[in-house]
Length: 483
Figure 1 (tube, helix red, strand yellow):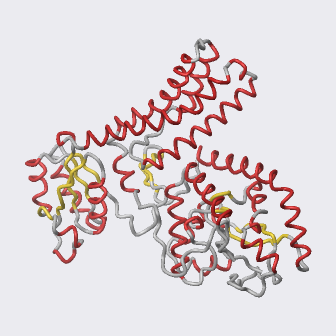
Figure 2 (spheres, rainbow, N blue to C red):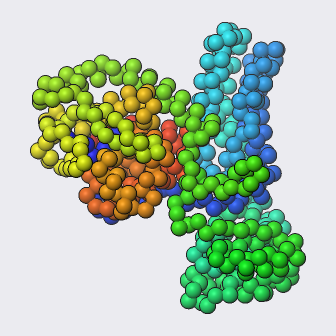
Figure 3 (cartoon, rainbow, N blue to C red):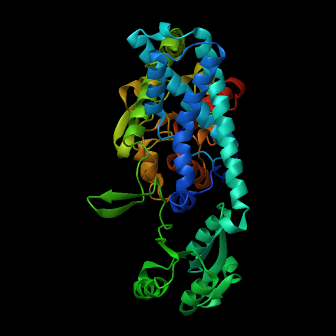
């Protein structure tokens, strides 16, 4: 037997064509504009803890509560847990709202656990804590929106804008120029390149300012603040000569390596004992992110299993009575780093195909039992995978695990296919809540699913996980198009 490699709490994807990922590739925006926004980052670092503490003090004052030692201890604990605050000024308002709310709920949970463990909740008035819990996220969102408005106002000031030029009018230069034009406070003047027009990007050729030999004079005469070099690595002698010329000006210099030939996952600059190392493909779950992901998986999986335990017993009985065979079907799948794992599902078919050749489930598949059709349509067959989450084999949110045989097939056909195994597979995922569930009968459907999986790896956050879980619940309740 085989279950659909993408089967999950979600409807099937579009019948044909490739879906477009929601997230735009913003890796270059994040990379190039984290450093120049140091003032905003400094403000954001103190803004989040400051707003939380100030709101607590204002609410306490409103109810006439004195700020005694317990209150001061709480303020210090809050500052320690939230500093430095996140810079959300450049986020979309909806993303900032979800991020603020999820972070605040996590912080409240931690504070409640600390209060319970130390038996100190009685030091605070319930009405103060309640109103503080309700008002704080509103105050944070308002402060974030105010910061965003100030940032936009400063970007409209011609005197505050930085001028920039791009060296290299190829595809990479065009990507960098587009990122510069969409960044606030930057004016991209155009390109410098020695190549013939037919070798340039079609849109870049119209903004060509001159040759490389003319760059230094232009930068000096126009007072250009930033120069981005996007020449290929094969042009090293030209790059060195160019650097020698431009270093005679006051412009800041940036070299953009041409790494768009591969899928960049969590790209970042790291220091390895004094040696700069550029990370190109790395799991998002390292350090504290790994701890946050694992703790959230364990807590949610344990709570869900506790709540659905009566339902699991009823489903097991239904599977046993519907047809002969085991209640649980054990699937061989590839997990973290491609290692083979065993994934649990309620059996929904009469046949058991789990070997080197695996046939995907199709609509009106004769192998599916009547009860199996019900649990597949409602996604109840996936529930035993919460046990896999507790075991550490899977996560609640992550790329769906495909059959081992399918992985061997698609890794040869789809670029960067195995990168999705940089994280644990999930019960639900970004691809599935965007309609890419069910039979992948064309290579385009699988390519689209992999694109969504890679976007999840690039943009992971706890807020994104919570968003996917909430969308999954809604789709389980209101959608019945799976098979």
